[in-house]
Length: 324
Length: 285
Image 1 (tube, rainbow over the protein chains, first blue to last red):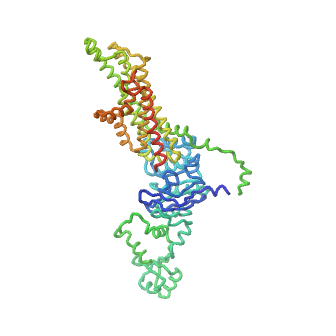
Image 2: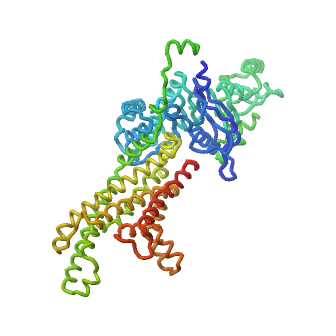
Image 3: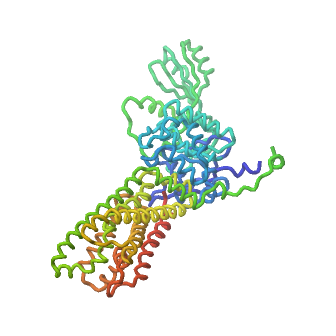
């Protein structure tokens, strides 16, 4: 399959400065065909800037990015190669959805029948003749996705595609992204919704403050997320803590009868509880969520730190600190 | 599946991108579709027509009444100048206002790309960018030219009964009428091109329209306060001065020759356009 090797997005030492601010800093990665590659990062990390550079809209300050072996602008029929959703509702407000798509189709001689097709696929049919100005954010996203699909491209770049969609729409985007990848296409999508990303992406690229933090299969990212934890609920937490005390074990109290234990396998915990005659009524191995991994990775890379919120975030924060 | 077997079963047809890719013609088609699918375009064009006809009719009535009064006063008649050619300049009287409407429309054709965010989609579809700018330039120039010619002719027809009321004779075939018709349309097309260029440079509708008004109306007025030789010379190269020169049957004393005025107007069309192409090619969208 010599041809498919070329069919990918390849960024090489990509960098972008805005004045003195470095938005993207020497980023290199490859987005492979046949899988969904998630692009994660906090706000202002450089995700959208990177995507705009891929699409030839922003000029890299240095480095280079190619799609299917060429810079985007060098393709003769770019939207048949790469479809992109960069910003929902970036459309003239008084034009109808159908006319917007027809305008884009006209640049590549794409027939109106294909326009009607993508309107069907994205569920826009009932509003296709209405002004885009009156669209909800979700409808705007669907229109953006319709535009991305218009040229039936091999590569799709979707910036926050589920932003503003209802649960049904989120599911639809997830299945669409997976379906397109299963057809052998290259799907590159950004999101800040961890749970959604963990369900959709096969591979992850994480950036923070413009720098590449991770580029690995989803499974590797999750398993490499430090030691596994176990949640234990017991009537006698203090006794259990004493029974488990060991240098390699760290224990966090997350509720009146709930402990999170790191450094001891569930089997060992159960055995020591039995030895100490402590009743345990829940013993749950916790897999690190993508959110945990991401938070750890981007802790120092977040551009805009939020102050601590009394109550809501407190248990999670204290738990994390104690377990470190 | 190896590449060989794939090629054996599916012989690759020589595919050229010209059939499915971008081209100037397609960019122009897309721009025409953009223009016709927003209601503001049609509204502004109709406004242009109404303004041209309305001001033409008012001017016909005004000039008619003055000439009627002058008929009984030989001194005033002498001051009025050549009445025969005067009647032929009435139809496009509204051009001074119409150029602003058409110019604003041309600004919007370009600036709305940036104010709505459409530019991202537009330049993602045509990443070479200059075909888009040239397509927009072609579109606004043709539309400005055609709407001015049509409005002038409609105005000329509408004012016929008014003029005949005052026994003024309008001659469609006269040199003065023809000059006013064609050079007026060409001038409005140039104003539209300048407007489109400003829209692309400033990426802001209001700013570009204000700048256009400044260039067309305010700058000549401000410059006329200065008696400096250099400024008087320079003023002749402003678009409206070149236009005034071209519609006069004979160039004014000390002014530019007709061909020089024509060239001046041509440069006003081309230079802002080239600057805009250059800037849009380079700037981030």
